[in-house]
Image (cartoon, rainbow, N blue to C red; front, top):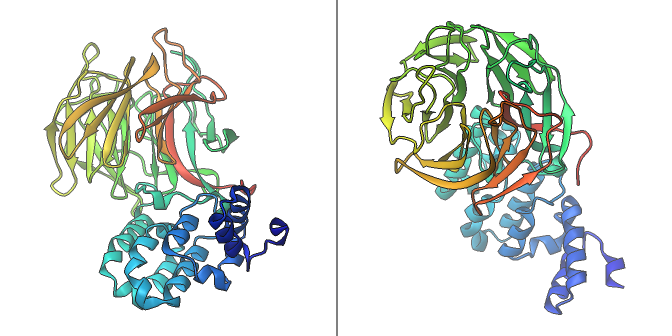
Length: 442
């Protein structure tokens, strides 16, 4: 009977009744109803009488159905102001579960930052700082608060760019979008000038850069994710392939590579606002096919090949403030054709025809072996999505590409095989961006 009476003004009261009387099915029905009708529920008296933990339980849920994150912020502030003297002490704890970085920048400046209660709560400043950094740096900065709620139509997706199926095989022009939550693949605008191979790929804010490629290309393209088009931008100063790219503080770094004769120590930095590449300090050791990622405000270049026959175990760290490189603790195995990502201030490395996944702590400067993949591969794609690390494709020992996707969760150290890629691929790029899907998944 009570299930049929649910509406936005009474569902929280009925949920509390169900909880008191251990009516699990009714409790779940009420909670689901409230999550799915949150914007209406938040307008009613029962919502303002929720306890702190009950409120947090709702707003931290990925199942919360809202049109935009601003609705969550307004509901939370309405709740706080209802009993401001007793509730102001929990403001920071509650705002931790509001995805402030995903608020529209105008709304953030005009509504959030000027709120008197927030201004008088220094403990909230770190959350405001994180949101501001996200507005400037985009997806370079990941936290639980930068993950979109699926009901808004946005989701974190992995974009796979190009690559080839086998050694000496044709290079694929495809740009494809993989949503790990649904397992769905979607084709995007094809790569221009796709005859090149062994180029470098990275994400900048919510767009994607592709630079260089065989043989000695200086070309740089940006994929505009909003418009689904590729745009040519300023060329590299030095053509290269088998190099890598990473983003640090909103600037793109192109690192090392090969010019057909020599390994390169050259490093270039791209400023998207001026559309210019400038040379910065050279690597201590010239390498091709290293793993490159940014972490804790530095750029890390791991391993790679200093010549045709040897592999490096060096870890080279770049400080943009001093424009200088330092050598850090060496990786346990000397490898090339490896890939790196950073998550929660740690760096994870895979590939190099080894099964091992290694983790590096740049603050403590030490390496540890954390997990094994199911087979040896190199030149695989790696990307962090929804707080987990995905390893996509790569080349096996026999030179053939693979279509496998592995998901590694550092929180549990569990690695699982998930859906296959549309085709086997290696030497591809993998990045994570936010993408709007007209077909909302909830």
